[in-house]
Length: 233
Image (cartoon, rainbow, N blue to C red; front, side, top):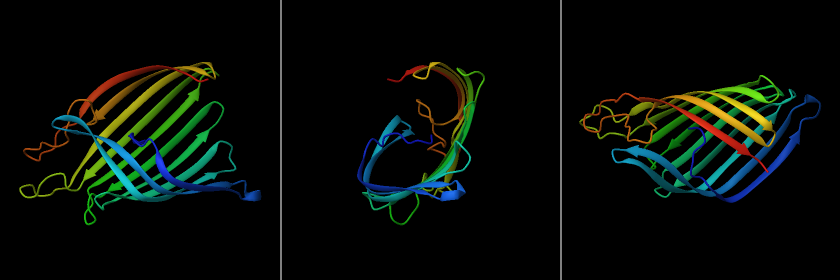
């Protein structure tokens, strides 16, 4: 939910600089970007899954990453604003915190996206965040946990009238996961994870509202398992 799919490349220029703050123990990585890019976002309607592709122009943004005096602890924030073909605005802001040590880690990221298909009105606000933590029971065996949230507010999802308000907010994703990984070596890792999912972002058409009545529909629940073997070369 947090990392949008479909952005394969960006066109433009980026500049960056690292700044050491001396005896404070802090250092900064700063970067700025200008250019354009294409997004491909997955949606669900009464016909099923479909992909909406948009080209965004005049994109500008920057990132600040803060390295703290505490080993393995860093903070970051970034922002990008752009414009659709239609003239509407698109903006995305994220912030994150990460602590990584030899036998444990904890991290969290928050994202806010605001999209307008016209210059006058907001269309969609997209909020996503997740938190992860893990601990090494041994040097090779780790146990991890994650909780992920995605909330969507659609300001013009329904015609009005007959409905009293065109604004619809719903919890698109609520996902809780537990995982185990085993490191055969630093380059060969076996992972198994179990997910408890509640929401609307499923392979089958699952709408948050009834298009005929405007009444909210309950989210669906499903559990699933992922087993993977990753190798690096």
